[in-house]
Length: 404
Image (cartoon, rainbow, N blue to C red; front, top):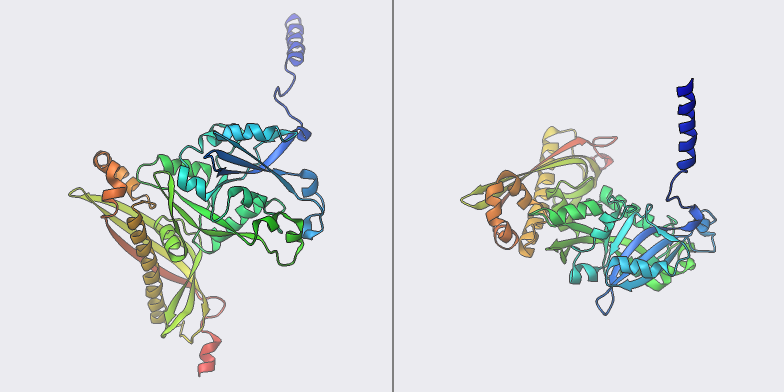
């Protein structure tokens, strides 16, 4: 009994000492940062822009364009580093900046091309509230501050709309990819692999995009749209990829989730639309007499999505011929992307990393000159197989009946 009394006394004393979370902060003490943007000013200093959520306005009547107040407020400040910009902004905000819900980092085209991105991510990786799964995008033809200031009509938080637009483009077009802080850092520190970052542009006058009238219109004058992939070399933006060149790059890096291809059939351009539902790319690397030889193998599976000429899709020979045309189109896109990358002398495919894994000793000798000497002259072979798994709810089009 004496031991039990001592035990309960110990428990009571412990409860008085342990008083809960020592660093607890109330909701009304926090400024929720939904996005963070980085620019350069004329003096060459960083300009940090913080998109802060207005909780009362988000929960209010903005849906359907009926609200009177913006869902976000934007603050900017300059500094020699990103932490200094945060310190200056914190003096303008009446609450503590809170980053646990930050889902977007925007880097301006000027920062990426002039100063580079190598030094930017240490703060984000080191801070306890920042998630390394936060998305990263570039701006194109506008500042990052302008991008964060545009109000959006569908998602109440503009950062969410950018992320959702990027996800939709990635899942439908095959020309864009979502990339996170963690992905960028891994690309920067991995030998023989340069990062690719999707970009957004503002369509319309940026200042008009900050007004509530823009999102209350049935056709907003100002909106943000995906616009190409940024190509990097040694941490600096050097070029943009668009259309088939961008998709060819993602084909080769196994990043195409879904897309559609148009092929010529019966002498009619874009007569058949082939929708990719899954694909797999494998890369093999060898060194022959210290010269790189790369093999790319792509396997695509999809369905016939649209036909504008009469075709006998019940005939296995017809389907096999269409599959060959699809494979040919994919191969041409990949080869076009490789040629473009070799001209830029920037290995955005990770071929150098593949050689590093297969020939680690020899890689040490060539890695310093990989981008400038070895990659541009590499022998790269592309093999593509394409398969038609379905033809939709019907096989032959009604166009065949019309022709008869």
